[in-house]
Amino acid sequence: MKILAIESSCDETAAAVVEDGCRVLSNVINTQIELHKTFGGVVPEVASRKHIENVSDVVDKALEDCEMTIEDVDAIAVTYGPGLVGALLVGVSTAKGLSYVSKKPLIPVHHIKGHICANYIEHPEFRPPFICLVASGGHSHIVFVKDYNTYEVLAKTSDDAAGEAFDKVSRVLGLGYPGGPAIQKCAAEGNPQVIRFPRVNMGEDGFDFSFSGVKTAVINYIHNAEQKGIEINKADVAASFQEAVTDVLCGHLIECAEKYNVKSIALAGGVAANKPLRERVEEMARKKEMSFVCPSLGLCTDNAAMIGCAAYYEYKAGVTADMTLNAVANLPLG
Ligand code: KG4
Ligand code: ZN
Image (tube, rainbow, N blue to C red; front, top):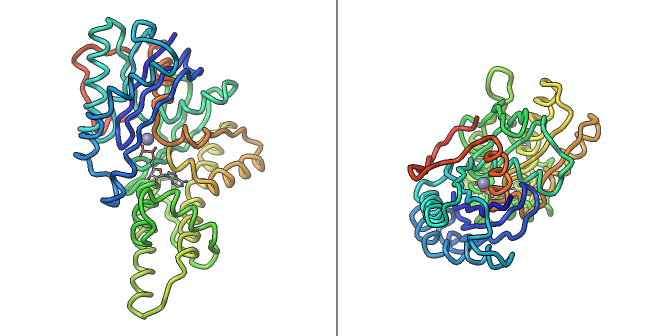
């Protein structure tokens, strides 16, 4: 089954053709990062306007790259939430139009399910049940994937998402947008043990996240130094911040897997591209004799191949949408 998938929930306009949920026939991403860099972060209205300009070319290219036309695909899939509502609407309207004219089924996809399913693309042997840490610019969830269509959220953030904290700390350090890769690069030159930033556990069993405290601690550290006229070592600050976030993300993931007695774990989302985090989780998984996978870097950040993969499992479970499909900014997972 060949699915044409569209993703436009944030600042990437993306389209892909995916066969049987795992074979990526084409994968086109038009990123707006350079545009949003000028503003230091994603400006929702600017993102929507760019999606409108780009979406037709991106879809055309995804079909061209695998020498197909709309007639050759079996269904159209689209991210309908969560995300920026104006940005989502562009993908949803495009997919509805394509589905209407081609008379092919329309498959609505949850963005987070897409991130999780990215793991199946390169690891076909990896299958549920497993526990996945999804950390991106908008979300920090620990999800129990019980089977291909049953997801239970075990933990979430009570304030900022992990990626959001990376982006904000990067901005105060003057390292630019997006913050994750910039912090990772700067941190590579620093010592993560120099400053002990807070590690916060929330919720009844301590699995929930809170990243606003660590973000504020970094901001306070920088302001204090400024007031005293002390020059900070940016690399040490970046490394110590990254260490604090990595400790919490990795710690909660492993503890959840142990509590629920699940021997397989995975990473997903933009923050999963973070090298020290990947290495830490891999090392812990080895120690605990858990199997571990994570998507390659290009499949961690937003893309449409992951949406095509998730759509396959949705369709097999009978999930399709009609022409009333709408974007849902805060679509819950489950
Ligand atoms: O999944 P994604 O592309 O978009 C959302 O769904 O939000 O994630 C983007 C987020 C940004 O906050 C970015 O700073 C972060 O992922 N990110 C990273 C890295 N690469 C991207 N965070 C830490 N380390 C990285 N190498
Ligand atoms: Zn995402």
